Length: 99
Image 1 (tube, rainbow, N blue to C red):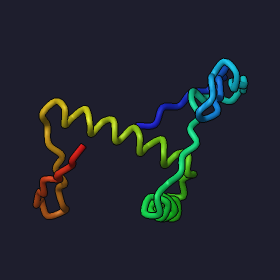
Image 2: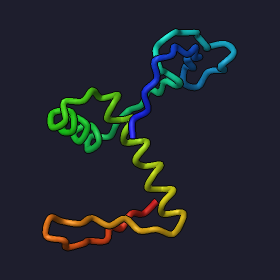
Image 3: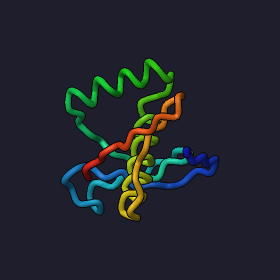
Image 4: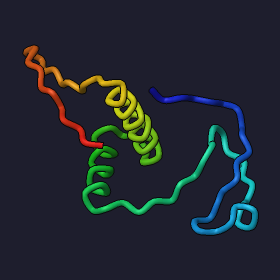
């Protein structure tokens, strides 16, 4: 689900709470479209570190995948579909997700 791009795009980094016309700063980075500075709650920070340890991925890659997965699930639920998890034995469990 990851999108790769080798082109370099120009982006504007916007400082939180400031006017983009004033705080904007131009940077060149491969594939970067937007930057976000976030504070994670304790449970999310722990989950991120656990995912990093288990997958070997960088935090930025985990967050990018999480956002894409969230968008996919939100779209599927909006279309009236359900999320189901199937075990190795074929047993299915309906996952209730409240958005």
